[in-house]
Image 1 (cartoon, rainbow, N blue to C red):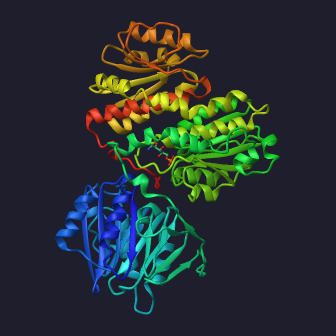
Image 2 (tube, protein in one colour):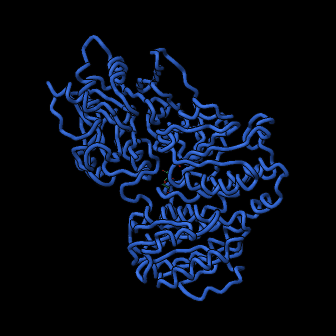
Length: 596
Ligand code: AGP
């Protein structure tokens, strides 16, 4: 998704801005741009494609300045093209913007008398709006404060004016923005990760905050225009995450980091009660009769797996895609805990669903996230962090398995008779995940055989069905191969019509109450000549005898969704490598989806 970096210093900020953009590349984007002010003049370079292309232009034009803003764009309004890339300019003003301006058409028609528009973006109206409101008797800061009251939608913006080479103005509503504090220099970014090479001191802005930065001062005005101080936070994240090490891709590195991520997520969370796990009131545990989970994408799949776990201990569980929940009438059963799951903690649909839920009579609001200072954390009563470490690959891997781990620890804590089987399975999880990673080469061989396919069905039963959904999502995200998932028992109700020798079916068979039924479903596929790729747990006694088969190590049934998902991640990863796609930044996708 779009990324913002801004800097004001007594040195050339172009390298800082470019390095910040590179650190935001993992979020997904299609074009990039930069504008700096040098001796009261505004200079801009923009480029479609990678930041490296922009960097080449910056070097060629020797673009330098001590005040600047930069942006990676993920197209919402207007095709990915240089003319639509930010910064957008109006006279002496340049603007970068994350989010969507919902009333941009209305503003555009008002501004069309006097301004000509060069792009199809919603952002360009912000530049012209601010320019049209600028007058000598008012500061840029005051103008921007006024201008944002005309903007509907979610946005973070950063504004510079070549008449004012000593100040950077920015504002946020609904999408993230932080100030990075330096010595005699200050910065802004949509993600603090962009600024870690220059500072580790950050101020997280709140909705409607409007700020003015100089080299040595920071002014923050809140919604009502009052000067306000926001807390400073130190971020001690190491730079490790930005280094692929010996791995070919971040996704591969992150898959292999899972044993560590799982064990860090489990630290201090085994055999604990709810109060210890969530930091909540000791009485909450006995009050919870149901949970409502809201999330998007992979995080939604984590919720679907958790439904099986919650309901196995008698707690009703409803799971919904956040973008649906927020636009429908829903009933809130009594004594229900609302849970938001989000790796980034910044997914707009999940945040908005949570805000809506806060108007309903839930018992309270729990966030499960990988981002301690995210909006979802701030909106929730309690947070359980997944200690996955930074996930850079757009396709979620370790974030997913750590979400599942937290959810199972939560079920364990809620279980009336402290479930020994859950605790044992969780304790051994990092060990079993190592065993699954040892399957890498075997899985790679199978993925080679599969990689020419243009379509695939993923099938499983019971608690592994959401893992089939996640497997299909992973495959389509990074290999661009069409994939769908079905509960195997559902095939005969329609999808079986698709099955012939040209339809690969990826199936998961583990030892559980449904093993025989699952194998019977595979027989049905085989009888129609379906091309089966079977991931089968070693201890399953029944011989299958058809299709391509991989034997997975034995695993505890309760943690099998977490462990099987690692095998499917490896499968998709190797298929994508075979196809030569952009594994870490797949086309059209963004790491953190901060627009509707
Ligand atoms: C995962 O591979 C995807 N990139 C995507 O589905 C993601 O899980 C979804 O956008 C939700 O993100 P979140 O967990 O940060 O809220």
